[in-house]
Amino acid sequence: MPVCKWSAPATVVTGCKGSRVVLKLAQGKEATMRVSTSHLQQLAIFTTVLTGGGVGTMYYLMQKKFVESDYHRLATQKLKACPVAMERLGAPPLTIHNIHLTDRDNRVDQSTAQIKIPVTGSRTGGYLYTCSTRDRDTNRWSLKQAVLKLKEGQTVDLLSAPAAPSCDAEL
Image 1: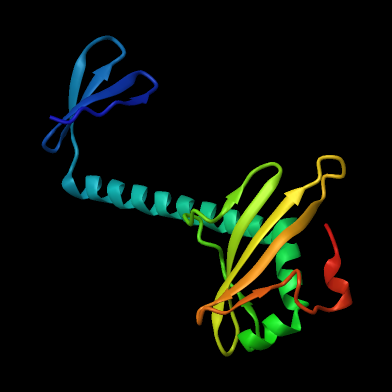
Image 2 (image 1 turned 120 degrees about the vertical axis):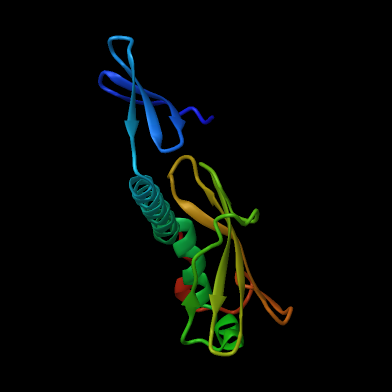
């Protein structure tokens, strides 16, 4: 018999027996309440939709936080400023996808950000592997590593490849 601990002011659900809910009242008495199966189904559907909406919102907000971060912006600016990498991808158009939140290559803490950003162009796609560190004094991020690994196995080191003059910026 499942035990449901659900409290409201003056009542506690102490158990469920079939389609009956057992309530413990504030005065120490127990009461049973008949609940139809359709009401229980509606409650289950409502809870599922509410939970799914919450999870979806959290996923969206986490992705938004990554995209707006300085370490992500530095890496994507460096990619866009590298003509060799852009040519190999077949960009423009360049599509920067959401990072995989469960990927073990993605680690961010107060002083270091190591992320793997999926990117695609019209020819091929790959991952932009980046590592950035934050200066404790200025609180600014600087890009320490940016390597594009294409699906075909080619790699382009964005920090040593020929790039536009404006790509050496720090945020």
